[in-house]
Image (tube, rainbow, N blue to C red; front, side, top):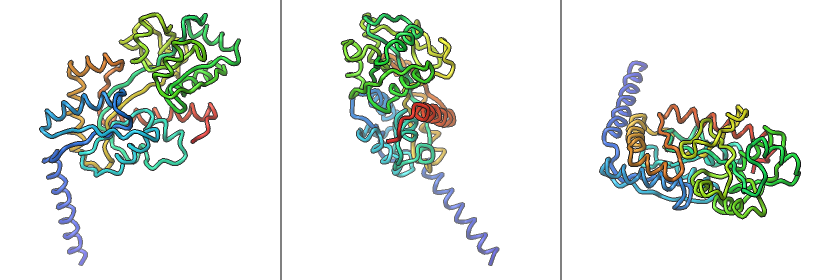
Length: 324
């Protein structure tokens, strides 16, 4: 009986492996879907559409972008995590859904680590710390001194729980100041507020939207938050260079599938996406939107997400931000 059972079990395992291999060899066998957790027009959507167009050409299957905005990315994340693990549904996730939400929200319908298999990072961009030109500060050192002299000194961001908000709280922690957070409804209104220089004169802003204003002299840049200088504004120092060794925040975007997706399928998707991102045409286009292109292996992206989560969880804990 035991010998018969072992034989039947072995045959079942072999059949499953054969079926999985067959599925991988025919992938893709129907249209693919890239789920974006935000409305059309933002950086996530731009990245998804650039990649989708070129994947359509190379895979000879339609690749469509499915925008599922709302709930700070939770809606799209849950849909993606619960989709069939066959590689035909790809989640274009970012800092908010996979690094910040798990640390900031009490109950999520998805697990950022267990429910997703990384494919490749797509892009990454620094957060720029900038001020209205009327503010009498020209460096982070002067900014900190000014903040200590004014207990009501405020900073603007695109909203509560964004990477920009947590960057502002990180400066409060690192420099022992108490600047006041003023959240706006998106990156555009936050930049507009700093440009006006009335309610707030300090802002934590994405590189893309703010670069034209920096070049026009309407916003004075003080530092960026990535670990290395950005090719977009190479003259601007990093917070690390200025002595804040653990000060690193960013906005990043990456590609993921449900965890049970076959490794061969993940590998094929990684090859396609990395090839597309490394092409000069795509690289140049994305850089011009204000981001750095950062393709990776699945293992590299997995480590990055875990480290990024730990970083934001620490900020949330030390800033005493209550989970939502």
